Amino acid sequence: MNTDTRAAHVKALSALAVAKYRRLALAVNVILTALALLLTSALAALT
Image (cartoon, rainbow, N blue to C red):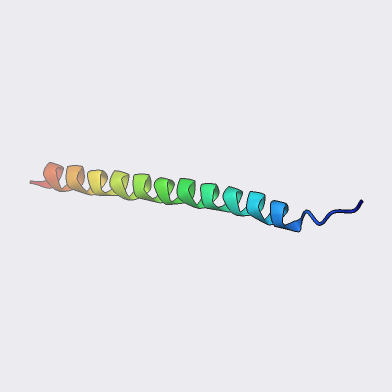
């Protein structure tokens, strides 16, 4: 009656980890893009 559900738990936690990693990667890309735009505008303001 006690079935082993570890595989299902690992699968669910793995899916959560992948989703969080993708959101983190997107956030890093957005921050780097914002920094590049800020640098571009700062250089344009200096010239």
